Image (cartoon, rainbow, N blue to C red; front, side, top):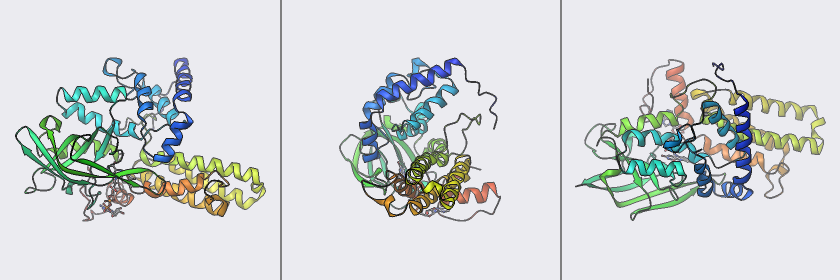
Length: 391
Ligand SMILES: Cc1cc2nc3c(=O)[nH]c(=O)nc-3n(C[C@H](O)[C@H](O)[C@H](O)COP(=O)(O)OP(=O)(O)OC[C@H]3O[C@@H](n4cnc5c(N)ncnc54)[C@H](O)[C@@H]3O)c2cc1C
């Protein structure tokens, strides 16, 4: 990795202070508590505040709703948002979908939506996965049927995170079931607050909310179509590869942390809490405890520094192992509901880890990526093997 472009100056140090003052004001205990309770990754008031500073897509020039930040400032902002435990998941969705809206959206909807995103008024969701499966994205069945200048959308999607509060869904539909599965797909920027769309909550072990979505002959204008009819696969490829952490990196040390290493933020919090527990209880004087804590810290650091498909797999597995190890170390007191010895951090890390093995692509699929693309092993004929293997 080339770090030569990393040359922070006084302006960057002042920017850190500016961001910290902003976050102290806006990431209130109430915002954090709501995030812990709902796991939404989105809070409209907070996003409006971010939008007022141009910090939702901060790299864009001011006239396009951004703040004209340089790459170091963008990296500072991202790191400080994570450190403050701000609800950031929506920012990742915006990063994935906005380029597709820019490239394939049509006026005036495109400008309205991009402007709304920049102001923090518009929330997006991703609608790829269906009840019958998610890894094999191109097998989508949800139907879009043309009727003049309108489309009727019918079927269901599984695990649409933020579907209950998002304004639009980046929706994958089947428009021609008679051709090869990658050929009969069309993408829409689907409005969700219209008749015929219903969200039912599904909660993970760690309390994150996602949704089953039902589309019951919901009617939308053709203006919501992104790209060509039956050309959805080309519209989807960029965002899908970006979600899977494949491609699009500048590799100067300032890219957004890929999904796998980003999971380690939770491990770090759990490790800090376990160290506090060890000091408070005096267990820090026990060499065996210190060894186990040191091993867990080493695993966390190794996973944090691993990128690509391996980082995706290791990030989820390290969080799982660290959570389990810390619970075993602290004992039953780690599991007390309101009075856990470490504030419930190990328990949360372990429960949170279970979802990380699945969303944004199941880690079994990433093992296939490692096998085929990094180790050059022969291709396996599995249902999802053509989902996003780009090479
Ligand atoms: C909390 C949460 C939030 C989510 N949010 C969203 C969202 O906002 N939008 C959205 O569209 N989806 C979302 N998902 C769905 C997620 O992306 C899918 O669950 C994931 O892609 C796997 O799909 P599946 O669950 O249908 O498993 P399947 O595809 O049925 O896979 C089952 C098992 O088979 C293995 N497998 C399948 N294909 C292969 C292969 N080629 N190589 C090796 N192993 C393979 C997998 O590893 C997995 O263990 C979310 C999921 C969760 C749990």
